[in-house]
Structure formats: C-alpha cells, structure tokens
Length: 225
Image 1 (cartoon, rainbow, N blue to C red):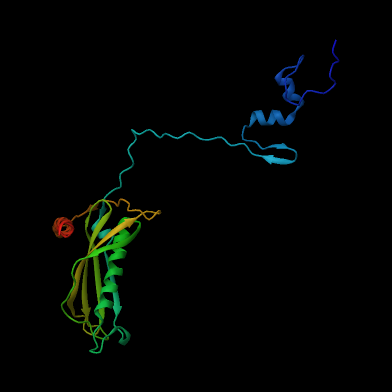
Image 2: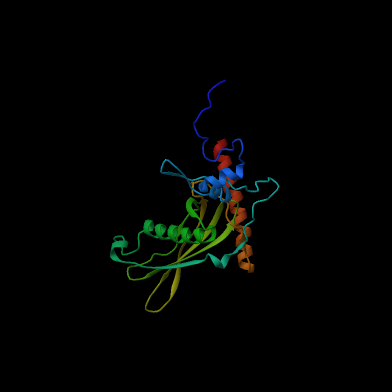
C-alpha cells in the first residue's frame, strides 16, 4: 500500500471531504475574486489585473450616422488686411502673390468651418487682378462655400480694396478654390452636405456643380492628350 502524501492541497482547490464553497471560505481572496471578476488578485506580491472584453454591435445592417446639412452662412468668412510698404511692389501696390496668399487663407478658414476637419487646397481657378490695392488701403476678403461634393468643397473668394477714410470699396480680384477635407490619418474624408437657403446661394450651388463637372472633363482631356 502506497504512502499517503502529507502535501496539502492548493488553496481554493476542491478536495475530498470538502466543497468549493469550503475552499473559498478557507481562502478569503478567492471569495473576493468570485464576487468581483475584475478584482486584482495578488500572487507573489505582484498585482495581476484581469480584464473582460465588452461586446459591441458590429452588425453590417447598422448604417453609419448621416451628417446634418450645414447652411452656407455657418461658414462664411470676412477678413481685413492693411496694406503696408512691405506688402507692395515698386509702384506702391500690393503684390499679386500676397493677395493670392490671403485669398487662400480666407478660403481655407471657410472650408474648415464647414468640414470640421483640416482642409488642403486642391486647385484654384484663374485669378484676374482687376484693380490694385494701394499702400494704406484695406484688403477686404470674403469667402463662402458654394458647392460640396463627397470630400471636396468649392469656395468662392471676393477681394475688395477699401479706402479707410471714406469707406469706399472697389472690386480687386476673385477666384474659386477647391479644398479637400482630411481625416486624422490624412486621408480624404466626407464632409457635411451644404444647405443653400437663399436664391443667390442656390444659383451659386448649381454654378459650382457645373464648374466641378467642367474641371473633371478638362482633366480627362489632358490625360487623353
């Protein structure tokens, strides 16, 4: 007949003549762990947290939430810039490149207000400089989102020169900028739809749609040629 081992059973292990409840009663730490599965159990003086994964509904039948349309007025921008000698050419007029720089900034603010994301300039239609902005005058820039596609936006920018003494303004330049919204991973991301409310905004929206189609057609022709 073999010898009976005198080695005790591990704590918390059911054994002959005792139940699991008796084992938990003999080990208070096991009882606490049974009550709270996320409790920290200590072994050898080192805390070992236990984690439990939560379940989420990943059903493909659940459509992503749609973004509410934003009105044009929610993203309109007006900026003022005083023309200093450092901004001007030898004739005392603001440099054309400086005007373009401010137009791009103003358009970018409007695009980012609408998208709620960082936006980058994708293209610019031609810019005609109709009248110079002289030293001491104010460069007035007005930007408005005209048309929105899935990830891109057309922003129209109007430039005016204002005499600060009289308040008189004259048309200086205008252009259409196209911006693309980027996600946190720097990938193109969808933007909210645009809601044109006034007859003028509706006309600008339809004109922006036609300009987008013309740009796409022009790029296709360039690829063919």
